[in-house]
Length: 315
Image (cartoon, rainbow, N blue to C red):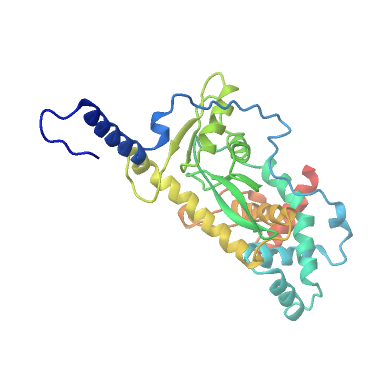
């Protein structure tokens, strides 16, 4: 920059200095602050695209060599207690004298998952008008994938669970669409998420098909409360984060999944256990969805057997 202190400084030097100063300001600014055109995205998802994660259908549960009690014991250790498939096979053989390989345990989860998915979907209770959602990463075939969850604050019910390889708008829309499926038609659902832009984009798409009672979106940004909205809705965000930690505990023994089908199967069974078996201290040690036909069964393997028996009739 040229210096010129006297009043007789040529005009072109003054203009040159002003341009240099403006250039420095622009370099420190974000280009988005000076955009004159913005992108507008309009989503047109079909019903076929908005399909919730579903385990592969397998009728081979009727052809297993072991008894139903053995299958339910395997689900008790592998799913309810979060023990790896190899340790579950070791326990069955060395404690109960039931011969089953670790691959057999993995097969049992895939056989039982389609029936438990039907049980989860058809017997999901009505949900609260306010729900919290988030996605947590898992490993499938060595690559990052994401499990989307939504949970209700009153009864701690997992209202949606969806697995996808991205954090884009479509998987977020699928999870939110399932989360509000059993919500009352005469109220506007409120969904609380983090700052992932996929959620407001998905809500915009879902609201296009709703004449009244539009979905309301609230965001909780970052780890500190830097705005009033984050301060108000932080407890809901913490609720979904606790669910993610519980899910991580039940999946860490798998040390990643070899296929998406295996991830969907284990996640489906985890939701069955969480919603219908797992006692919650905040609910006076009741499960989120208490059922009379399960409450009086004292053992976990007995509860699994009852769920599968009920699911057979729902198919």
